[in-house]
Picture 1 (cartoon, rainbow, N blue to C red):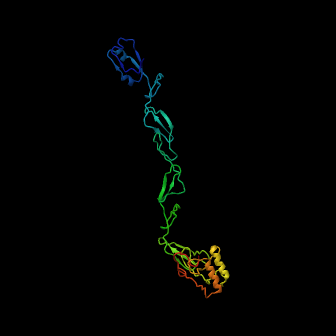
Picture 2: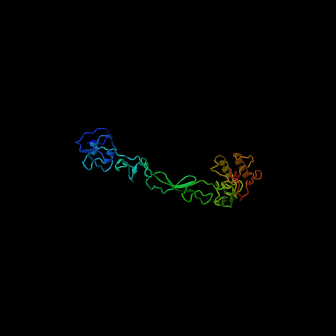
Picture 3: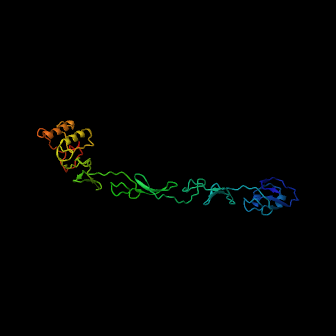
Length: 306
């Protein structure tokens, strides 16, 4: 028996071995033919040779005698894979090693981190829009991949709400000067044509000037009649005196600087009281507003509301 580890046989190694009739070689015929045999070994070369019969280079058991050998698989360096796993495969017999499931970063990752296998996935896109100041899109809730990205759509340059995703921006109107009638004021945006209309706003029944548009209304009153009973009495003087202490509780509907010193004080209340006794010596005249009644304008202090 000659093992398959033998690679050469020296000169005269089997010279004179006339009883050698059969040789058992622990390898294939191809391996035997690759052995270097020296001269004068005719007894060896003429003997009957029995070779092991294996299916391939990775088969460990001889088909003829059942001899078992040790082999080394020739595994590929490139991974083999299916939809679930990857492995290294022997290029001769196909046996596998290093079998394991694919490894992905998340449910949307398409490429295995180990073997590079590429799978087909379906993203889980949100139904609610995502948005920034310029665009909107649908985003995958697993990996953040985006689709349907587009610019916001507005009805006009002053429209604040995107027609597609409801994103809200700040787009101020550019309104013209106020127009007004006796009851309301309005102005129109010079960009989109939208009209802003509303009722006049006054502090009280005695306030003549709209706080928003400056419109001046006509307020009917009798100079010196502060309590509204249509006559001038000492009660009006008392009312004016109370106004100097509690202006919010005792509003007045006219300019009551009767002594002309530029301020409403208790002296004006005394002046008004003196008028009830000596009207010719203490005259009271109706003051004028900053704006003519019926005109919108700047919301300056109203001479009829101190």
